[in-house]
Length: 303
Length: 282
Image (tube, rainbow over all chains, first blue to last red; front, side, top):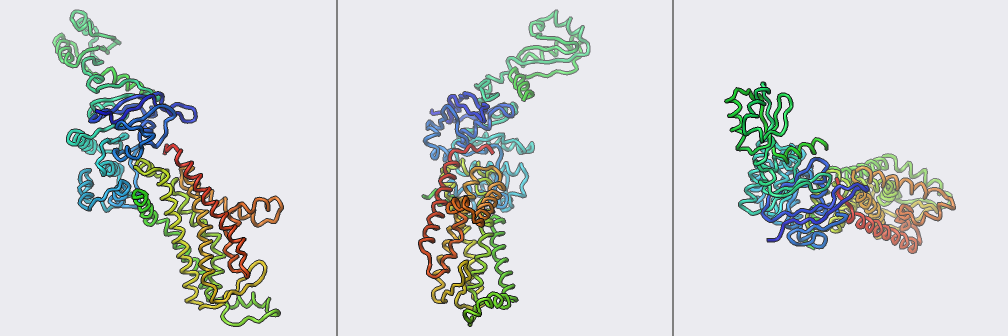
């Protein structure tokens, strides 16, 4: 099967500063692909290049096997996108905005189609309201309606959860799953929050300073086989003693006063807790994260 | 072509639903009505002051203060303000959408950038045409209804010209055509600037500043300015007045129209060239 998106050594500089540096990745058809990076990492620039808003200085972009440089028009018919944030003509109603989008896609829809579309994104009964009266979350929903209006094969969403309330985030996640599973749509989903990507995507890439940090399947990259476990105890001497006398010593990576750090699989954690509590170690706090999560947090802090 | 018509329709919907589009219509209508009311009240007195200067040469009889004269005066007055109203709407054609973020939507649809810009430019010209039609309706039709018809006594830089009533209509049609051509230069210039900027105000201000500077240059009779005057579009924006001279200097009018048309093509060409290469970062 042809890849939905293929980027090969794509670079872009602004005023001599590299925003994207020899970036290569491939989104397969049927993927929900997470595009992850801290703010300013080059995510939006990359998405803009895929949507032909920005021309790359170097490299090639292919969508559905066709070169974006030479087949832009036919490619764009297959894509629905929200880049950065959904923006609309505030002086028009939601329905009038959707009619503009439909016309731009050469679609002839009837009133029922628009009603169904608005219902699908949770905006039933609000179609005649002017968009300037909409909250950010409602605009996000309307943005999704605009993305779906022409039934695209590929959906590109740039941080779509921004501004959504918790229920909105759940609704969006379910909508994207159903679009992917039931209708086979490919989704490229950018975010700077790892857990969002972890929840919804099957494959992902992390970029930083416009370069690939890591890419692969979410299952592999965010494996629970090698977690970073951090534990705080109130009686560290006893804890240390008990660890030395057990197989858990092999998992210990570092210790610092009351805090002990281990590297282990998720399934081992309850066994460790059971062992220590049985030997009168008082655990005050325990948390764990994936090595990649840890790394991502560091680069996010840095940016 | 289908695609172009669709995006052109979209542009028309946006222009006609935007509140700021109606500001121009309201201003034109209001100014015409104010001038008509003023002439209705004090016009005869004012006119007798002007004609008294010529009374030793010839006698003035009949309805001089008629609809044609009022239209001539209104057109002379508003031709300075009209470009500002045109720039007010066309100056943010691209930059306004860049600032509001809707440009991203437009440029991620199948239509090419050239088609999008041409659709926007054409809708800008249509808006200009409507603005002129409103001016024509109030300045000519309503003035004729209020003040009646008659010969036009046109005061030009080289004296008075009397245009007979039966040969005035085609001159008005030609004058409004040249006015449309002049305002189209302004609209195209504004659209061109709009492709280069990412906020909606700067292109509008730049158009206004350009017109003011060019008009000032046009006012001064200095040898260094005389060299550049023929190339300034503002010099040719008042060429419609030549239609009310006798005999009509057709060579001057054709030359002015050609220069205005060249300006339109040049500005549009630069606009398309720039827009096609522009990175949309907003």
